[in-house]
Length: 263
Image 1 (cartoon, helix red, strand yellow):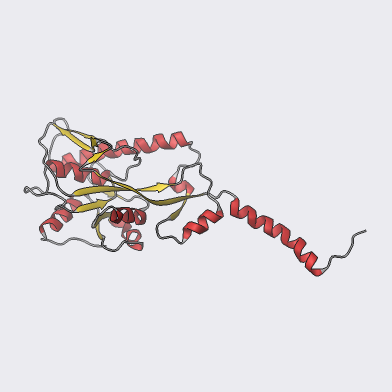
Image 2: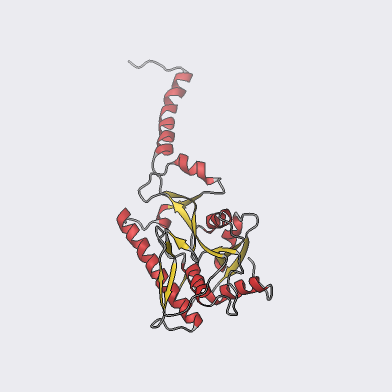
C-alpha cells in the first residue's frame, strides 16, 4: 500500500529528475570547440633558429620592421567541451565558442586532421610563392623560395608569406621597406592569382597581433565586421582583397601618400 506524500516531499521527488538532467547537461560533451588568441610569427625573421623565408637565385635585401602572421589556439578535436565550459567562455572577449565541425572535419581522427592541416599549409606556401613571384615578374624556374614555419598548420598565413617574399626581394619597389619599419600583422589565404580569401578567428587574431606589438592589421575585406567586433585599441584595420591591394596600402602607409582603405 502506497503512502500519501506531503507537498514538500512530492516537490523533492519531482525535482530529482530535473536536477539529474541539469547535471547531465552541464557535464555532457557538446559539439563545440573553444578558441583563444595564439602565437604570432614574423615572416621576415627566424622561427626556431631558421629563417622563415629563404631565397636562392635572386638577391635579397635587408629588411626592417615586421610582418607577423597570426594564429588562434583551439581545443583539440577529441577534447570534451561541457555546457559549463561554453558558458564560461561565451561572454569573454578573448575567447570564442565555435562549432566543432567548423574547426575539424567531422569523422576525421586527430592524426588525419594534423595531416590535413599540414597539407593546407604546404599548399598555402606554394601558392604564396607563386603569387609573389608573379607580382614581381620573376620566374619560378630561376628563383627558388623556401618557407619554413614550425608548428603551424592551415592556409591562413598565405597573404603574409607573399608580402614577406616581396619585401625580401623588392621592398616597396623604390628602395624602402614594405613595412615602413612598422610591425604589421594580418591574416588571409592567397591563391596563385593573388586573390585574398577569408579565414576564421579574425577577432582573436587582432588581439594576438596587438599583444605582440602590431599597429596595423591586414584583414580580408569580407571579414571587416568580425575584425571590428573586438578590435584592440591602437590597432588599425586595413581591408584587402588582393595581394596588389595589400602592397599598395602598405606603400601608401609607408610614404604617407595616397589613400589607405579602412573597414
